[in-house]
Image 1 (spheres, rainbow, N blue to C red):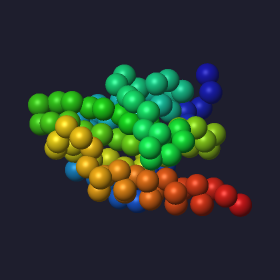
Image 2 (cartoon, helix red, strand yellow):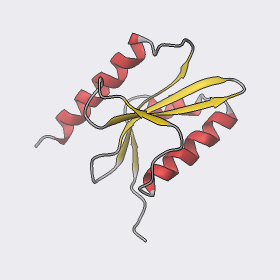
Image 3 (cartoon, one colour):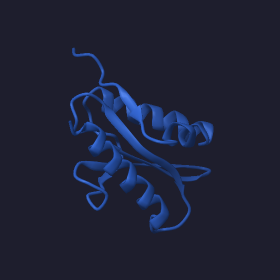
Image 4 (cartoon, one colour):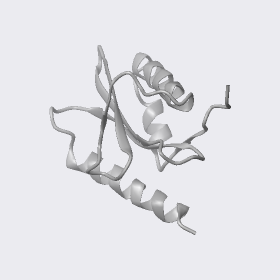
Length: 112
């Protein structure tokens, strides 16, 4: 069995995740562990509008809907771009913009 892939949080993603209610935070941790082991999360969808390889983990609990946007295609780490509570049916443009900017920054950092 290979070592789990490390997780890297971009911008304020870790603080945002820590602000989730306990049950949602615990579920997010479980889903991130799945990714580290090379497995897919239980409830996810591609978010190609943000960037190539970006995916969304969907978490629902009694206190609402929560999302983690991440990219796991790079060999060195799983990058968590953005974590937020979803308050409407459609993901807000502000949340999409944050994830998109962090993705662009990540690509630029990785380019030698």
